[in-house]
Image (cartoon, rainbow, N blue to C red; front, side):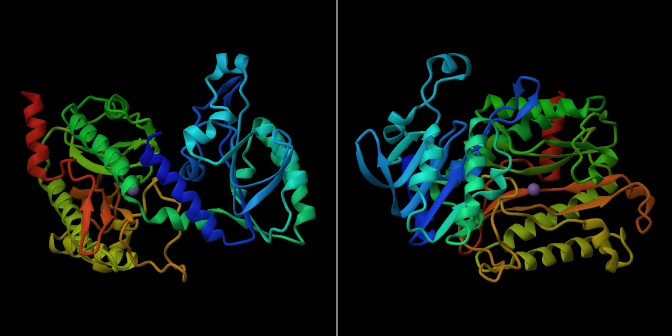
Length: 446
Ligand SMILES: [Mn+2]
């Protein structure tokens, strides 16, 4: 881990401890393995909040934090010790490491992760039973994740949950997610660099994939092209399952089957993003399968692209997320009316369906609180990263829409960083102008 990353996680731990306040302690469980079938597990992915605080990628780890310090009897040093941060990790084990990979071990935590103290994770139950709850008023814990723990950590956690009952009258037990969500909302310079990497990998992969699209291809082959470029360029995972929705499938917002065949004259809507160092990107582009938009497809696309560009222009500090959504709907509704697609403007919501966007960061739909929250109203602030993704959807059978538009679904989505006087578009390299799309597709056919 380089110094910049070490400093980032360190400042996150300090800030979290500060926000918890005095007389508080936090126990944050990392992820454990999730079984796929029989003796095979899913690929291990660290819990995002745990990652945010530590940068540590091993399973079965637990972080303890307290501003006042955590008192415990250290049997190695044979004296009472106080520590503001302790990481519990898997113990070193030659046999197990031969099968499942090298473990960092408690001895190297300070040097590698910059966390002051470390213990083997089997020390945890003792720690919880005998040393922990002396003089604390508040315990912060990631409750929702506690339930899904597996393996050895599940045993510790079960004992711990049992113990909570006897603690409950004397200590306030709180979920750690809210404070962490608030912290995760504003991205630091370090995080924005990683998000730009994720966005660049995705944008370039979209441009490369665009060149391969042609009638007769399977949607999963479009997906394979994207994923090849993600992985090849250093992405560790998809940010979410890619949506490669041709024709009328584009009108199902979370279509993930990707098993149909691309047909001449149809559009294909691709909503996908690479993850880079656990940070997500989220792009949607809509391309003509044959390389040229039809007249009707072009009309719909132009309205959506216009809304995308106008909203990006408007997004800056102080603008309310809800106002941005209303503005977006207005542009879409007026666009539909002016082109004679929708006569009764009042019905626009049936065809715009979703909001203008969402926060993005370590999660695609970033786990941050906003909207309808008195403490944090929905005004955008510097360092927010949001998606802007207007769409129009005309499924086959849409009553209020002329038949020639049926089966068209268009969305254009970018990821932007909110600044004081405007925003920075992280995904601007993914082509979205009609001329650029058609030109790239024509070039690739020569
Ligand atoms: Mn999105």
